[in-house]
Length: 423
Image (cartoon, rainbow, N blue to C red; front, side, top):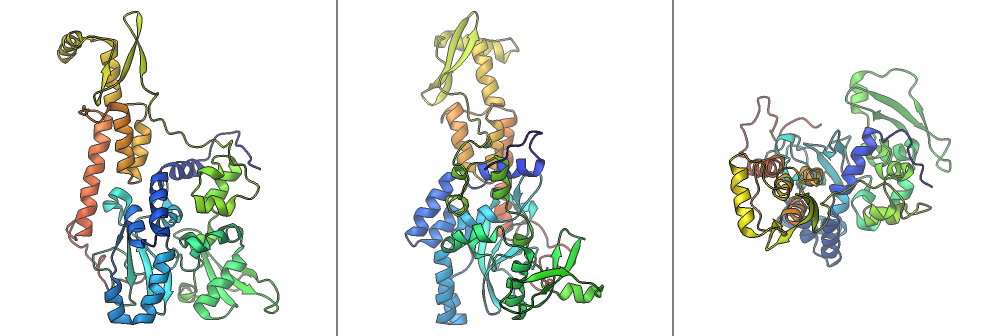
């Protein structure tokens, strides 16, 4: 059962509540699911704002039919909306962690990877999908960290992106470090024994040793007793972040901040268990107070509603509205109805919802909210709403320049070099 918070919502949970409300909108999930189930993995990627930087015919020419078959099978299982749901994010606003290369699947030295853009080019929060072809190679377009990250990897956590493996989420979300460490060591060293590191932050880590009497017993891990040289620790396998951090969805469910029905359908189905389907305090989405709005104007209650594609004061005749609008243009007080319309144009109640959508790249959803408030024929006036939309448009241009390699000169030290050291 959910345990409701009595002393306010912690900042981290508040961030994840907003992320779950806005970062992967239901329209994206619906479109991605329809295209994926129809076998159109590329269409599903497009719907999830994932740019595909690989071509299967070229892969077949370079690496043969068997690897191409395995890659195609993984692409057909890929749920890009589920991947976006689970990718690491940063405080305080919950944007995707920038400049990551995350491995999804391994084919010998090759990796199927997804990349996030750097913070300077994250407009639209778009992702890119490609095949990393081993040391000494990099993406066709510049990227700050082209090598697959050791700490942020999903190839050992397919349930975070593979629709067919999503039911594993319930078990893996509760798995201890010993179980996850055994999976890591088997993948990296071919043995269920040995040492690995757990990174708690940029400069904080633990070195653990996996122990078990024999293969029939559950694995156990303990801290390494003797300090190891720094170069030895650096070479140890790193437990993926997905195994270190608690699943945000479980934390939200336990705090009563989200209902199972508001989670991604694949996540909700995996976690359903004993959780209630309703009653949670989901993040609000103030998209206006309905049509028409009611305004007290000169001793009467008047209506403000959408008419012919624009927000209008429907209880005033056009001649009066023209005179009052002219009066307002010269600094006069104007009618309360016109002042209310002006306020909705400049800073509507739904502005936080619009900003959240724009922050997470949902420009279509943001414009739908604006059109629902102001009408499809509205001309935006100066103010925070217009500023938010213009800023989002500029960030989209910045991402396009990054994709084209035209955003800025490469930094000194080879930050965008294909031969950059592995992170």
